[in-house]
Image (cartoon, rainbow, N blue to C red; front, side, top):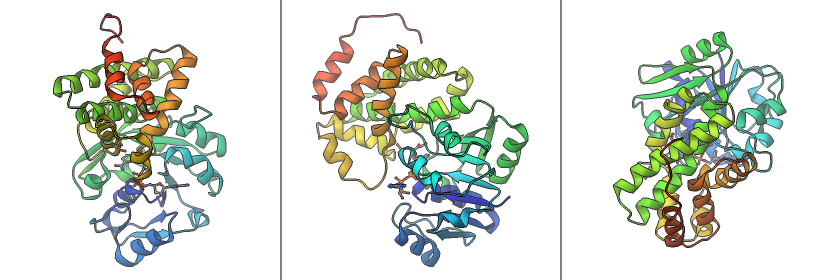
Length: 325
Ligand SMILES: NC(=O)C1=CN([C@@H]2O[C@H](COP(=O)(O)OP(=O)(O)OC[C@H]3O[C@@H](n4cnc5c(N)ncnc54)[C@H](O)[C@@H]3O)[C@@H](O)[C@H]2O)C=CC1
Ligand SMILES: O=C(CO)COP(=O)(O)O
């Protein structure tokens, strides 16, 4: 199975490394000419995944046209750019594996729904889970959810990507796998805020549990299965991203919790913190459907410049309620 990877940020590069096991050939599309040059000349993505020696099987290109004729395409550009990049990519009926985590602004569509609009004849799968790119690319043990309605395609993709240290678990719930990854990024910002504001470990654990209830409410309303949400792509990734400054979303939250302005924190970075883009869409989408998402709303308020202590006070001052999803 010839694999093409669309997007050479940290995660696209790490997934190219996974697919290039035993030096199998992989074509990796990068938007930046300097990334193409660094990968092909130094076997390193110095801009987005420095200090990882890449497999000689990986060849980078700046031309999306070179992805024509692949057997599967991994789509790893940030969620807000998926539509534009896929519109330029020769896909046809080639299966696409969606690996970005987010919801498109304005349309409220998940990445898979965007991909289906742009290329309606391509079968779809979603790969998601607790996966810091650097650890994956360095060969540390990792497990992911690989969701696809077509069982034969799911097995073929799992076999092609699996290795001693990369273990895909199959699922058929594509929507559930996507929702976990998109929502956890917003909750990771909230957990970073708790850390940055010095609110303690109890508060962080409470936020993970109540955030998971929020993810579950939203996911169930969109047709996700509860067991997917409590699996690797939901709870698994939530726990990872809410616990470590390796997470860009968590780190953004730490800055917000320290009272630094969102605009400055976001303009300082070349890497993507998807939760900042997902939060307002998630709030809108939840409001339309009448779903209560107080943590998401608090993250939006902070991104829009609200005072951190006031936002925390407001969250804690809500009426007492039953513990249920
Ligand atoms: N880094 C990680 O550990 C993981 C990231 N992801 C997800 O993978 C997706 C990609 O993230 P990363 O690879 O981490 O990116 P990154 O933060 O390492 O790099 C930014 C990427 O955005 C691309 N980009 C910037 N402007 C663009 C535009 N106008 N059009 C198309 N592409 C543009 C850059 O070319 C670069 O590839 C995100 O949805 C992220 O949530 C998922 C799992 C792990
Ligand atoms: O999705 C990720 C880990 O699974 C990466 O998280 P960040 O985007 O917050 O760094």
